[in-house]
Length: 431
Image (cartoon, rainbow, N blue to C red):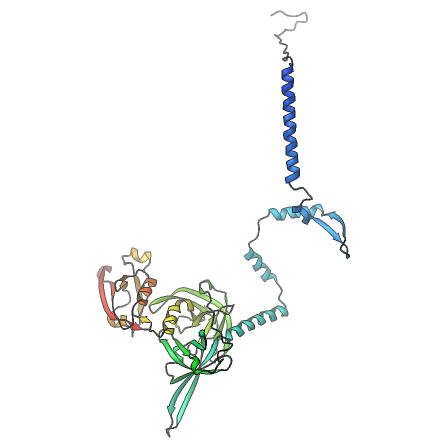
């Protein structure tokens, strides 16, 4: 490679010359420009037509309109930038659950005397509605004095109207109200008095159904009397407000108010499991105490119980006794064997226990006790019906007739925790 006169090396160089522009090439560029212009123009029209701008309907809340008294619209002024910014921030933040909002508002609300008066007025209205369904049951016992003169003893009990058909009504009350009565009278909320007779009684449930007939009452005697409305016990939870009506304070036509303290979902009672609630109220289970929810609907009745210490009064769910009440209203007896039990759990099965109803207790004057069934046995069948749960056992029992023979299949643990299959014959009793 040769050197120039100044002593610098000269590298190979190349001059790049572009392709000459032809008419065909120029036409292509012009066509491409026109197409791009059409596309961008269409996009702009779409945006202006369909995408809301700052003054669109969606943001009308960001513009403040001033209207004078005559109704004429004044000039509008735009909301300050800080307001728009706050609105956008509120729209993007996570919404608080409505339950938390309500709870917060209730906790922060400063109650006044007017609020208290409103609450009392609502409770008074509910108790007035309940009063249309509650009655006084007069239990009359007749005797003779020293000089053979007739002596009538009258005890008052509480009851509620289950149903009303024309001038006939069925009343639910306690067994105590009828067990020693020579005659019965019903005093309705409208002060009408009518004779009544027993339809059915359940000793183990402390329930009785009595009836008044239209032929034994004056015309219009049931005017203003309303049957109770059935409440939804399945949703009852601790903290729910309840009303006790009937005779909670040991006298009829009394009321008490409180909240549910505790709920026992599967409380064992003879031959079934029930939902049992505990409430901090007065209750007289002998005279009759009936429990209503905060809308005045019937949800249960106070029950004698020795396991309510520390929880308040025990309340049996009305829904779990609808079959009992229905049979009593029909004049039928309710089948009874007399065991308390629970489902055999998976943990119990792992120890070798068969699937069935584990007997936790036996009523001493029951058919089961007389037949020889004892605590720790596992019942797997009632007659020909297999049962693996307490509910299945209760359903099988409800299909039996009182005074009919039945055979229970039972597994009993022996030496080495080995279970032996046994069968027990008995006669079905009545509750």
